[in-house]
Each structure stands twice: as structure tokens, then as C-alpha cells.
Length: 149
Image (cartoon, rainbow, N blue to C red):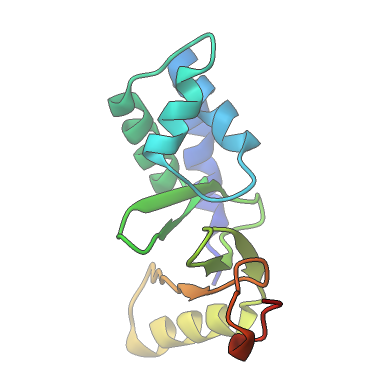
């Protein structure tokens, strides 16, 4: 079950409390094409006309996550990385362990399984995390893995 209605309402409340700093965080995050860490986002903000404190970046990312506005993955060291969530709901991604690049993957079967599992178990508001990692074609250097080198 895709429970987007409450999340859309939360997005509206988040936007209603917008400050210049929060708007700057959201604007820079919107410009990111891949997942980005809070520190990397902070570094990008430092180069703008409106620098934002690291605590504000973390606080804003937590609020965006709670509101369902970002997808979150963990990198190899366990650091959380963020990407703006499309309006049609969360996605699952295949993440390159070498460069951190990502691409969305078809995951309808996972969504159906999670919904069915929650329904059959009697649980409500079931959420799930699926992380797929590998080495992208650009980063592969081992001929045995199908790379060019």
C-alpha cells in the first residue's frame, strides 16, 4: 500500500515553515543528481551567498526524511546519504560501491511483498529498506567482472 496522502500533507507543513536557510538546503539538494551526504551538502552550501550551518543541514534533512521528501541510503562507511524523492513515492536504487553513483531499479515486487507481509501479519504503517550495491560499468576494472581493463 502506497501511503502518500499523509506524506503530502507533511510536505505542505514543512514548506509552510520555510526559512531562508531551509530553502537553501532544499534548493541545493534539488540540484544534486545523485545521493549526497550532509557534509557534502554543507560544503556546497558554503559556496553559496547564504552559507548554512551544519546543524541546520542535518535538522533539515531529518525533517525532509520524516516528511517523505528524500530517499536515504547508507554508504560503505554507514554514513547516510540523501536524494530528493520523486513525487510519486520512494524508489529503490542500485548504488555503486566505488563512485557512489546510483540508478533507480524496478521494485514493484518488493512493494507488493511489503504490503502483503504487513497485511498478513496485522501490522500497520509498514516501512521497508532495500539496499542494492555493486560496481558500475564505469568503475569496473577487473576483466573477470566484465570491465574494459
